[in-house]
Amino acid sequence: MRRLRTFLVCLLLACAAAVTPAAAAPPGAAVAPGWSALPVPPSAPVPLTVSDLAARGPGEAWATGYEHAADGLRPMLYRWNGTAWNRDSTFPGADELGWLGKVQFVGDEVWILHNRGGEGEILRRAEDGWTSLPLPQTLWTYQDFTAVPGGAWVVGEDGTGLKVLHHDGTGWTEQSTPEGVLYLMGITARTATDVWAQADTTDGTTILRWDGTEWRDARVPLPPDSNVHTILLEPSGRAVIGGSQYTDGVPRTYLMTFNGHTWRTTYPPLGDTFTEAMVRGPDGALWLPVRSDRAFQSKYARVDGRRTTFSYGPERTNAIDVKPRALARAGAGLLSFGTVEIYGSKPTLMSEWLGGRP
Image 1: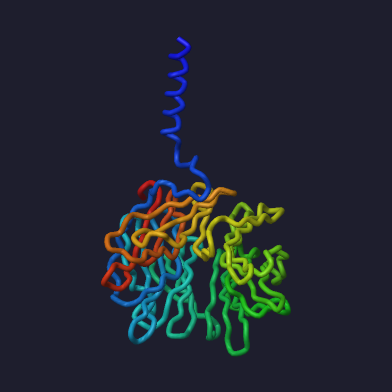
Image 2 (image 1 turned 180 degrees about the vertical axis):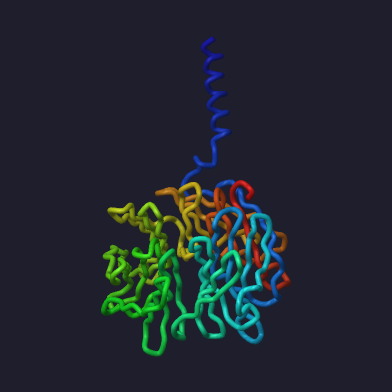
């Protein structure tokens, strides 16, 4: 009887080990792939750059970028309708030189930063179609854009230096920044009175914050010798900053999380990953595309506290470079958009989905 009991206990332990879920894998291990490919209509046989991806839910997403045509850059816009990707060429300036940048949802509208032959404007799409909101002046560089109900900002430079252009719903004004600010690399808003920007200053990288009255140094304790790639602002009051810290000239990715009171810095095993495409997934973890060790598959990292795991996209026949460039939460799923290069042909567009099918 004792031998039988010992045998049954060993058998149960062996069975339990055999069905251990992927979540029990050690940090840094690859988890079972759950990504599936979404077809994207063929693009022009020229080099492509994907700028941004934003989703309102599983039934609406927009991807922006530009084509490197023989005569210059050409704007590129695709829409996901919950079933398929389709190219949109109905916006003003679609057949002119230029490029499309960041996408924002403002109420029921879609807003997109548009460089139209050197002139800056914001494309706005409502139920009755597209309109454009011209910027009050031409900039040499249109670096970034953000918009929320009641406010929009465009940052860049002209011949006199840094420019922060603000639209309050009725008109444009130019905002000043603290002394010593040389350049703004990016900007993002939670509300019309809570806007953050990553700045290059005479003292190094700094986070600025707009409180509805003025821009101030947010006093974020960034790691020394570091830069900032992205800032995620969440309705709950949480914030996440991703960037690179340089040690002996070698970059490594860091993440800073803010719970509303204190900052916490971690260094996930992400190498020198550029974190601009990082998003908060429907599972509460942070997700971002990373450099893949497989030429025929994309790779994504999932960072949940101190735990980092990885997953791969679907295998693509004859692919030699799969690069998801932008990531967005779409309801209960994750949506990516980027490029894939197939052996013997120029890069074309790719998209992948993780989660229950929309």
